[in-house]
Image (cartoon, rainbow, N blue to C red; front, top):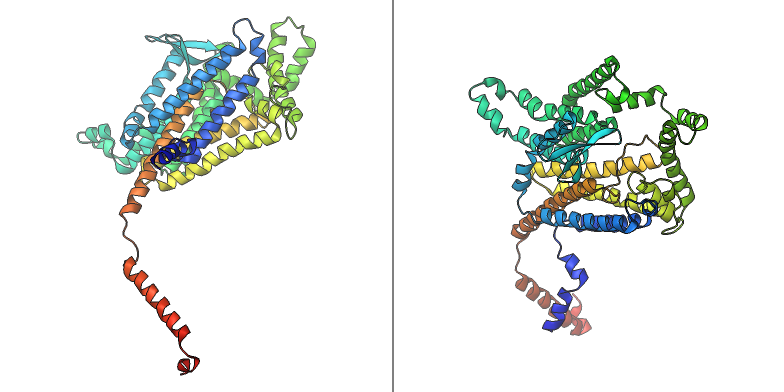
Length: 473
């Protein structure tokens, strides 16, 4: 008997059943990781043709990153106090603004060296390890703003309150809101705008949604929104006043975005360049690279059909060398069809649904804001990636969370999932503890109730055995 009991404990189902935290989120995480490994294994044939790397090297790297992601999730999952996340969240803004300042300076600071890739500074190298700064900033700022709006709600800004004892100016709620909430958002957006306008808009929107969830009213966000638009026009004016080449202007990617809006940088222009220039011309290759990726993504979705071509039968992976990053959803649809694409969408939508349940089960304002912000970040980026792959927007370079290849992105989203699972575990434990301590609505004695039921049954049997004339009244 004892052996059977021990055997039941060691089964996979019991292992899953013993996992704390939201089990649906656990299932989503594991499925996304499995899809990532399978999809990247099938989509790296183009890389195998390059001399600098090999297919197995990419797969090994992804397996290592996946393992690293699981370690991060497990570490966060085992944190038992929400105060730990609250303390480290306070450093999110300082860490973000430091990394963005290193990128803006274009100079090495200690072991941190900015790296120029794809016509912009977005990556820093630390000991040979490359870190995409914008991916770090996304998660760091969501956590910081979750702390900031909670501190504003409870008036727990230690430094501002300390200064307020001598300078009453710091005791004003609006001053605290501007210094701790609005100013960090604007400075971070300004730092990101140097490298990418699309990332600025996306991360800025996530930050505004986070503070809106945290309790800042829509009316209060009208003025900051107007200021944000004013800053954008000011940056456009600064770019227009600069006589330097586009790639040397203060906001080079802002200039590219304006060209798209004005229609001076579009598909027709690039096609004309391809027709008029020779294949050896740098402008020809640049125009070809710009146009073949979105076109190949549409071809992949069209050829995938309902059920797809099958694993390993993609043809567009030979055309787009970064299919496993910016166009991962298109690749999934090409090999697994619309059904495979719908399955991936369901996973992210399920995360959004489960996130809302976790938020409702939390009684801690910081925890609620953090979970809501992180869930919206993950699902929002997933939907943006899918829309772009379906040609519903310009390329932004946003990866498919926990599926696309990308070291910094993968690890930071693992951190986000780890925080969500940890907070869901705390919420479920508290609910279970309160339920166990709650008194029953109606007090009753189970033994007396049972005896009463048996007596009634005996009386009924006695009536059945009486002569018929004795039952007449």
